[in-house]
Image (cartoon, rainbow, N blue to C red; front, side, top):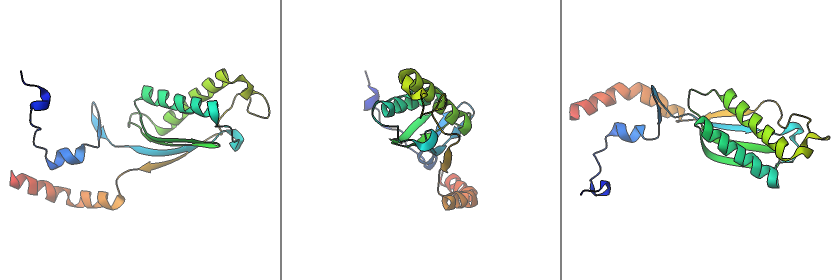
Length: 159
């Protein structure tokens, strides 16, 4: 019997190599990285110890449920940095709203003292967030768009 590891890898083409970083949905391929930052209400330095661990856990669980992949996460005392791949079928506002909302619900359930003053009542996070797209270099995209047809014709002529 022949095992899969014994089979020689298939020849990879230039297209295979450039497409490998992309993820797939039923009707699209995508590569959508975002850097998202948000803060607790009043930017209190509260994201430490067990609260920090609970926030990290909530972000990981909800991201997985939404089909998003966390590349990097850094929960600091007074803000959260997240580098995440989000499929195009989910808007950034939906993703952030879900993550912040579910994390707040879990935090208030696990740490009821957070509802008391001087904290937040029913609001753990400040309104809003900062988001920045991370993708291919703009100059690389310009060159790709400009020379794509020429490069594809060269590949066709070789075959």
